[in-house]
Length: 446
Image 1: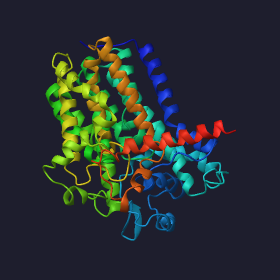
Image 2 (image 1 turned 90 degrees about the vertical axis):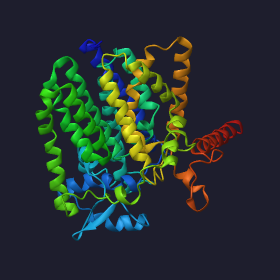
Image 3 (image 1 turned 90 degrees about the horizontal axis):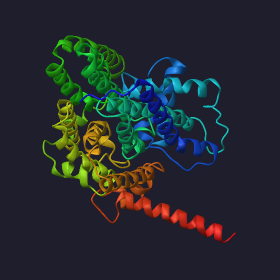
Image 4 (image 1 turned 180 degrees about the vertical axis):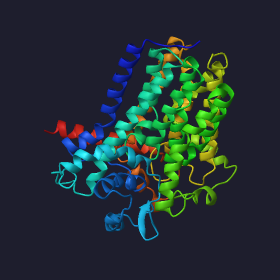
């Protein structure tokens, strides 16, 4: 059964969801700027994307030589940049920086970036703040698109509830919304692509074709997204064959732009900066990766977002849904992307917080909550929301410093993602309890 809600109520709900998620997402930024520095951000992996919008607005190109000395002085080995043909360029895709350009105009034009008027904040560290604002805005848009996709599969109320779980109970909050990761545009592009695909259920085959543009852009933003792009091309071939030619044509523009950029800045149309990781650190079967991505005390998806276990029930129920073929492909995309991540030696994501490397696959898994949530009894539904509250608390832990203190507390920074007693969630729970204790002592001794 296709569920089509009234446009007015759906759009109003979408607006409220966007405002809620955006306000929550920018809380760490607002707190730091209006009160005092407390929340940090991941810097090395997102540094190039955070500086590029400024470079593009100032000089009109994508080279980072101006900040070379800053990178060398502040990072022992700034692996996020590389020298190609005598120019310093980003080793990561530039899609996050492109989307963030509009958010740098006012801070740059008003002089705020150069003079933030905060004793503790100086240029060029200030560039991470518009980057954080942009990431929050882009991710809030992605959450809104998730809601629109869900509304093609279920009623608006159920869609809104699952959207809230997606927004605050997963690493979408602690990762994508807090800095300009590759995951940030990846989520938005993929979900717009999925929305076009789902539109075909009530608007016909030709309505799905523009979705290819966004799946293609998602692949350019993060190479791992080639798998969902290919699988949904197969889905279109099976479900909307009349649209296949247009689908392929729509996929071409992002590829052309990427080839031009890679040729000009990476030295070859087939080089995208960190492709060596695809050949040097992969293994076809890495059981520790497969198990660890779900159950590792410091990196397991079901440790940080246990409510997602309900998707197994949702997948079972989906076989009876009118959209069962979509649910099947969503499940295949999640399984395929998870297996792909498990193949890497650094399947745990390295220095970071939570389940970062699964962020791109989370929408597909979360869609499978929709059939299940409609059939939960009162007690099961209460347990479900309790697990979401638990997950939201764990995601909030990661806003503080994105795992930096947890990594620092290991000898020689050699962390163990399997150590339960020294797991990341427990570490931050102790840190916050200690801070709460200090705060209470200060109140009682006044």
